[in-house]
Image (cartoon, rainbow over all chains, first blue to last red; front, side, top):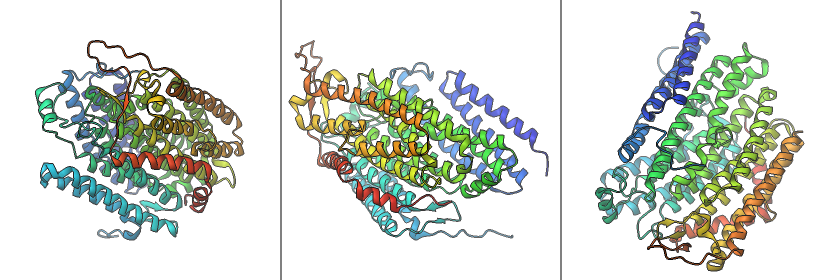
Length: 100
Length: 528
């Protein structure tokens, strides 16, 4: 069994970068990429913990997260594409018809 | 251990879920192979038959349910779970009937004729002239219903995450498919999708931390580790918090509520009606199971936080609803306030024998009473129309009571139920959740809850006054802008059945709640 702490630190850093990116970036595609980064951070930490505990549940979950992320890409890009085609802009600041 | 051992599945208990997913897959084949003019009738019939079969099976399971874990521990079939299945399926049937409504808008449904055609282009007009209809919405609804059925019965964290995504992804699409006001609808879908994916990122990271703490994905196993104290309590707290973010987002609790008003307003009203009830039922089922079964022994950590979230949610929802001028948005903020009331029930977790049974029962009843009221209210929103489709502005509803006493009267009934006035289901629901929180000793939260109820009574009653006692403004002809007031369109029988059934259920739950309370009582508690 290896020491998993460095991996967990990397995972936490990736997650923070992703979450910060979602909050500060303005392009819907980039925001979406940051969300994927958060999911992958979770994957890294799942696999690390799986190694730590010596069972496979974490690794299996990581596979499911990948599948879910792929499904999410399909839905997400469809929605972002539709928005882009009707507004000629993928900026999430432009989508501001619904307020308060 | 060599080779794969094939998992043992209890098909007899699980086939309601298989039926729902199976019919959804058949629905996709219908989309691919059936001629366009037959798709609508085929899809509606298929979806309804599938849901009714699943509901009948759920009722048979529910008559004599022995709580047990099934599918190698991935799912848990117990009383509250089966009750939630029933509610989700009933709500889904109502949703399908509302989706199938085609009489209000000159023979087409409320969904975009062709979602890929840009708003305001020739392609869109062609699609409208040909009377195209997106019948994919029925399989999408079924997939979401399948996810909702898995969500509250998930026995491990992995299933919880997969179910969350399976229920969310079709919803993101359904929200963006409105026929009218398409830019609003698409914007709502974008916001819902980005924020929903963001929150599920938190959720899965929380899952990984909880797994790191407990070393198992199994909810009951986590419960054991929490009870005996794991290695690193900080990991548990962080994991619990991140998972709560994901779930509180789904139920629309402050500070994760911001999608609610936009999505409720932008989505086609039939979708709003169904999802406002169904996602709340499914997500509260999962929230309860997770925090009772897995984190129940660490309640001192999460109960105060949930109390604070409940207070913020109730006050915010009720206060902001007061200043709304759009019916759908007002109902959305009232939905946020209701989330707060439901969370009040959840912190009543320690009432009674301290294992969450009483709180579960109170919340199950509240969910049922809230579901029928919100579906009925949104269904009525879709029949009040002017030349631009649904008229959701307050000004258009002014004096509706004189023109259509029936619609205004029923809307008043649903609002009174949401306000929690006596003789409606909402009153009994509020009574249940407040008393359970009081018995658990959380009286400050209950005081705030009662204050928030009074504020919400104010804006509900104000709207009722607008309906009945305010003179409609004189019709001003302004360059063919259409009428300033809305008229009531006659919906198809499906919507009439849904509205009638919701009204009946709201009154019955308020006047003779005992059979339902007894049913919930018999459902027992979540198994550990």
